[in-house]
Image 1 (cartoon, rainbow, N blue to C red):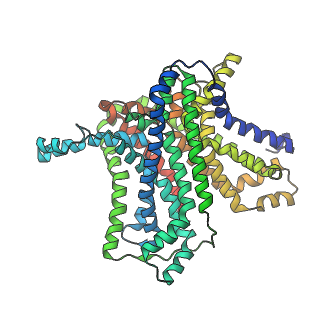
Image 2: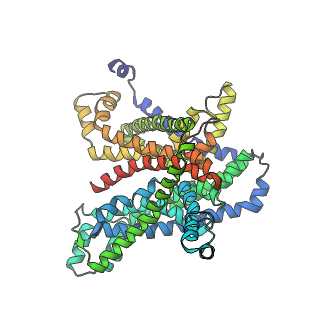
Image 3: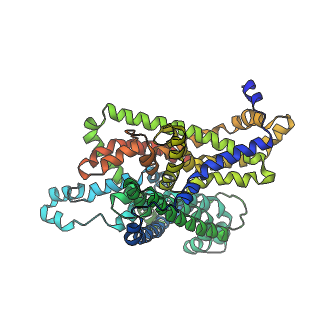
Length: 533
């Protein structure tokens, strides 16, 4: 290690070069899209712009607004109840209501379709128990926009729930205690103290929900709901890359618009905090206790337990024909690509964060923060945006190292999920304050040595958490993997999606889906511990 460190004696110019290189890679898809969008070679653009573009725009915006409203309703009330009151099942629901975030949206979509369609679980039970006439009478068309909104909301409300739970538990505690002393009732405290104090956290969680909705492909494709992302895939599959890029430009503009709006809302809603004080839980009376239990219980039932049990039933019924050597190979592919990518992304985030701190006096921190913009770029844009430079490099060098390779796929994941590890490490570094830099200064240690011998050991727990979080995000990613994966290379996400494309084989997607969900609960448990602390 000593000889390795002696080899790299970075100057300020060296750290600036590292910073610019990483940020340049992150922003590569955007530059690529902006350049290609003006290309005249777009065979289907006239058809798309005349008949489909307006539908993509209004459907995408409507989906964002509808899911935003539903997730706020689902998230804020249970977060308030759990943070402020003691009721039956409170400790269980505190963790349980985070679990739906482990459900990929497309898996939730095909699972509920299998429950409610004409040959699904509900119809079969109704036919057996109450007869065919009753079963026909209660049947309804499940494949409508409303149920798509509901399914996406079930999967995404934990983003807002977790943020509001922290805010209600800590940030507003002193104000709530003061309002109790002044005689304010619970409803007044909720609307006049709790909600205003939680707005920054609420809007931060809402931004993540919006980005996930704009990135959504599997569920909207399953429901045949035309959005920007589905339009990008249609154009790309038809061989019209320029039209796909132009649709991606509209999608990026929509993402920037919502980013701008949420950032304004966050800035306007910031309130001076007086410190963190634990809330003294108030015991709910009998009928209020029942209401709190039913609200949280029904949400957990429909957002997690029912679809999970249905998947488990399907997995038990089909595992003998599905869990073959190919299934183990897919699982191995998923584990390797997710773990290797998570380690690479976390280490690069660590270097990016350190480089930004070293150049803080010339705006290095702000420049490093550009590296997390990839999380606000939907996966379909990233995938389409890097096809062109990858193809150019491969053609110039007469190789296939990038396009359709594991290496190229890893770079796409790096762009998309850099923010996950960067924010985790940044939060841990802020807790240390300037102590690490002061220790390095007192020891007269060079920055590159301090990076590996001081910062790295101290931040090791945060590095471990960041790797796990990125691992699960990469494992569940669908749009990027579908577009950029090597030929005949499947992951658990693409395997579940492939099976779910037809109702006849949807049950066979259950083993891969169950495995994805179980692995997805790992960061949920970590997140719960962080919130609790």
